[in-house]
Each structure stands twice: as structure tokens, then as C-alpha cells.
Image (tube, rainbow, N blue to C red):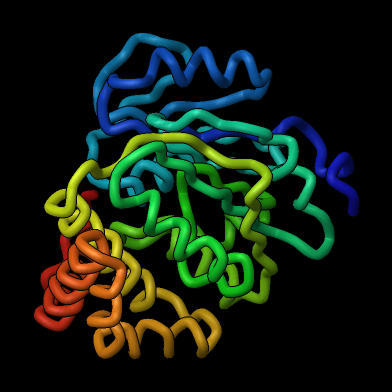
Length: 256
């Protein structure tokens, strides 16, 4: 099957905690010329927006799935606070060998710039975590991973579950999103704690390939090596340690 055989235009589901960035996202998607739905935690009177109390992205996706047109063959998940670049490249990968695509994230400043410089070369070969800022999948994949369980890292859950089910994933670097993230080590530590805990949550609900599970079993022991990356690395190390402790003590928040 070639990309053009996938039927109607891809359908975007955008996740928004509140009204911030919503107006700009609507303009971006209208310029892209794709059908879309925004699941928003704040009531806004607009034909493409549905209200859902902000419980977590996992809940927003489950809720929004009810509104996806039956003819849509490709589902795209997108965060509201992002700008999409070169989307066609991501779409072109959805062929017979690729069922799910997640895309590179570019941040202009802050600790995340160094983090992605380290993580992205690894992700080109090993799917250790996903980026839900822009994620595309064939409809049958989307339907099979639903419902998404209560999980902070809903993007990695989708990736891990798809791999468990035998689907093929691709990390796309030609298509990417630009966004803003943390600006200092303190924010980065808290962010890394949440995202890492979310991945451990995702692993409790899925059975990805053994090497992924082994990677995260070894992470607590190898986390001190992150300190070699300077202040940012020390923040990652502390964040990972907090996540591991929270996972062990079953402190599992589900709202990002």
C-alpha cells in the first residue's frame, strides 16, 4: 500500500489543556488544509472544538476518538503549543512497512536542547520513547491501542503498545515540531521526573520488546552517568531518581 492509497486526508486530533495557543493552532491547521478536532479543557465556542475537562492527554484522546470521521484512515495526534514543519515527510513514511510515525521535537533554548541532541541519535535506531507532539498512525493501529489507560506518557504507551502488537514504528527527523520547554535546571528536573514516571506507567500497561523493558530496568543504575552532561545532566539524574522512587511507591499521578 502506498501513502496515497490511505484514503481521505489525515485527521488531526489536537490536545489542549486550555485556550492558550488554540487560535494559532486553528490557523496553522487551516493553512495545512487538513480536517481536525481540538479537545480542549476550556469551553470555547468553535465548530472544531469539543470540551473535555482536563484529566490528562490519555483521557482527551479516548474522548476525542468518538468524533473521528469513519472515512479517516490516518490519525494524527498533535499538541496545541507546537508548530508543524514538513508534515508531508512524516506522512510519506506510512507505507506497508511503517504503521506509526513520531516526529522530532526542536526547542530553541533550555536544557531540552542538549537532551534531544543525546536522545535523538538513539531513537533513530531504538524506540526508547515517543514524542507525542506530532504522531501519526494508521487507523487500525489507533483503534487497537485504545482505550489508553491512565498514563502521563500516553505517547510512549501508544508506541509501546503498537510494538507489542507487531506494528512497525519510525522516528521521523525530516518532519518536526518547534515548541518551548523548560528554561532552567529546576524546571528540567521536575519535567524529567514526570516524563520518566509516565514511561514507567506505560510499561505497566504494555509489553514492548524485551530490550525496551531492559533499558528501563537498568536506568536507575545508569542514571548517575547523566551527571557527566553538566548541570542539565544532574537535573536529569535527579528527575529519573524521583520518578523511580514514585514508581516503586505507587505514586502515579495521571494528569501531566
